[in-house]
Amino acid sequence: MAFDKKWLKGKIKTLLYFFLFYSGLLHAFLLIFRKVKKEHAAIILLYHRLVDNNASSKFIYKGEAVHHNILDFKKEMSYIKKWFKVISLDELIGNLKNGKSFKTPSIAITFDDGYKDNYTLGYPILKELNLPATIYLATSLTGTNKRTWPDEIEYALLNSKVDSFTLPELFGDEVLHISSLEEKTKANGKIPEAMKLIRNRKQLELIDELFNRLKVKRNQDHNEERRILKWEEIKEMSKYNMSFAAHTHSHPILTQISLKEAKHEIALSKNIIEDKLGTSVKHFAFPNGRIQDFNEELRKFCMDIGFESIAIAEYGAVTKKDDPYFLQRVLPRTPLFIFAAEIARAFFNSNKYVMRRKYGTNK
Image 1: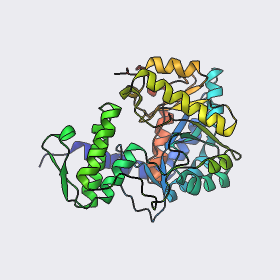
Image 2: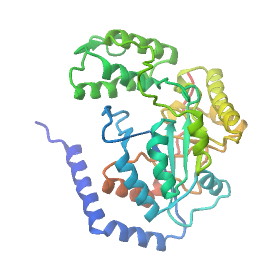
Image 3: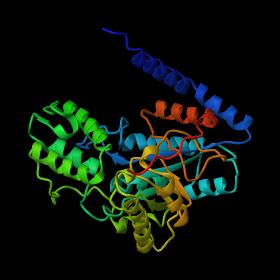
């Protein structure tokens, strides 16, 4: 068996994080760092779904836990409130627009997609701790029983009774085995990654084909619990430190549709939220969040229609030198000692994470 250097490196890093956190050295470093350094960076945390201990879905998507346990979330919110300044996205962008650094290490909280659990599980914690947050909404899903396309794949796999299947358009003759939850989890990571590389219309056709091969009905299950926020919940949250931003209308990967369609998706989501809430929508995050999923013309379009920021899903902190239309974010990792160490690492290395690459192009 070949020696797995990556595995060993990961184990060593985890042990180091554990030692630094529980020995108190990490927090001693933070205190010194805060006092010695006159100018600081900010970090934007990126969450998606929150789940409780009884959640049935245990899938992992995009290599990170998108289904974030509420017990971990509560610990993380208490931790950042104690050790950092938690600011709104508006305040963060205000600093960048004025070329101002942050007086102390600061953190902004964001959620993508607009899941119902942001309201039922996350909002009570944020309200109790008086922490601001921003939720990016995919407006065609809001107030409905619809699912995002990655959630459609998850739903099909979770509800399928078949043991294996093929999907030749993506994987040729390869047989995908899904007789166990572990195998379904693996397939749920593999299929969406392949789907990202194809045009949106073909993607929708392939998801239909996936449902057929898995022998699962695609029609929305009206008995299934609603996954997405409704406007009444959004309006309630908007009164208490929660702001709402655009995440397209139907959640496509924007470089997999035409430029005209992409602009329509962006503008429509902005207009709908503004109409529903009666407030200006200043911020945008594009689905999937990789730099190849967006382009420079769409960036200019976002500026022209009044957005003040664009958030991506690439790792890194935000400094006063960074472009507000290229905001890097950090996916939280668990348990708490890893979360804390990764946050500190991003702050310590903030100057190294200035993104120099340009956005991709539309096909």
